[in-house]
Length: 98
Image 1 (cartoon, rainbow, N blue to C red):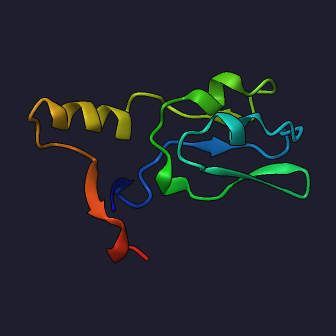
Image 2 (cartoon, rainbow, N blue to C red; image 1 turned 60 degrees about the vertical axis):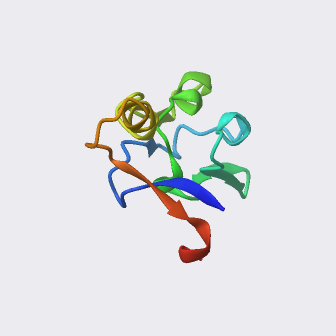
């Protein structure tokens, strides 16, 4: 199976666990399962899977999450579909990342 992955350590996603109230909304709205609930609070499970869409930050009622949406993977996918080659994402074969 082929998917998109980020280049390591370029994501702008930040989670302030002191502001987290454990509602779980971030886990629900994230299309790439970046978050998980542990001991009643959110934590980042896979930062590099974040496509910086901003759904988590827009839906976090305590503003515990920040991300600069539109600067990462989602923009890269659009750029690649337009034939641009300066993408920060790349297609990978999932069997090689396991």
